[in-house]
Image 1: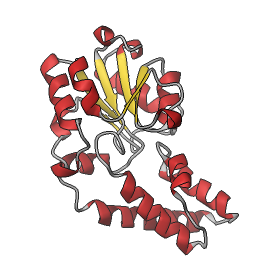
Image 2 (image 1 turned 120 degrees about the vertical axis):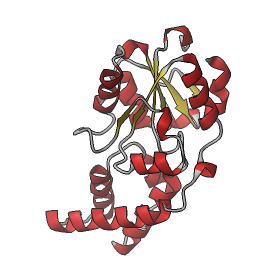
Image 3 (image 1 turned 120 degrees about the horizontal axis):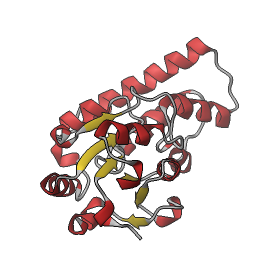
Length: 215
């Protein structure tokens, strides 16, 4: 059960929570994997949610049974990101997921601090394209952390940047790695999506719109 009265800050994941960029990650990884001779599936993609680009590539290479040199991996990572950046050029406010804007507005009205806690290194550009960057009091993305979820670093840095105790932070996540990271950080966490994919969440809802009235 979520104690909403105790929430002083909300930390949002990005992909699949605020904006539907997960489909663009899938398209880019699928294209890369096919070039490596591996048939990348939606089940594989689910395992990459909340995971860094470097670790995602390592998983794909493992599944494909391939070994690559450091320079080859760097080239593959750059290629994937180039394709992803091409795809997200089309992003605009209409690509915000249901309830995203309404919840951000409600939290701002209530004086609840807002942070981003995402593995994406392109987070700032995505927030700018979708018109919501101004709602965030702190941005902790893939450029600001050394360790990927399920390590809690990204969320703990978010709490620190906001000056809010971890116990007073609520995390909104769509990936199991993110749920585990929030738990490790000592934070309440709500899963966005299907309950079977989000074990350990305090609550699971279909979209952010279900939470607006809670605040």
